[in-house]
Length: 175
Image (cartoon, rainbow, N blue to C red; front, side, top):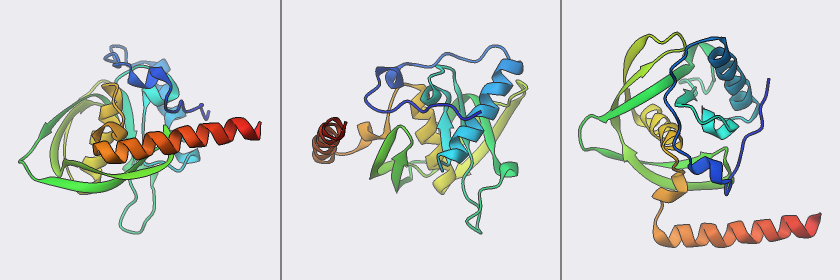
């Protein structure tokens, strides 16, 4: 089932998500719905809080070398812990399903170790580099109540706020 994605400035996006304690059919349904929602929205990642469920669960499914998004590459990440490997940073132009139509360059760690649980509660580890590392960090920020727009420069944030207010005003006029 495709769920509604909550968008900025919804205050629920700034909640700290709770750890998943029960790995049951409710969690599996949530993860399946999140996958359908992410694919329907043409995203490469989605955190549970973005569908208004404050649990520490996220999905990442980046495109492969053929620019295809395959379900067998899907990462279901529960209760993640991220450990930077080295100091090297990378800059990527990010977007977010909860901040539609806005893209900006963000600096993140290029190489991380991810410790997490899968949908069955099994403990896993994954080393990630490049865009995969960026996507995991972006989605993990959601679980801690943060959006990527908080990582952009002061001037770019001012421009975003101004453009956002203008967009809201235009939407009200259109109604």
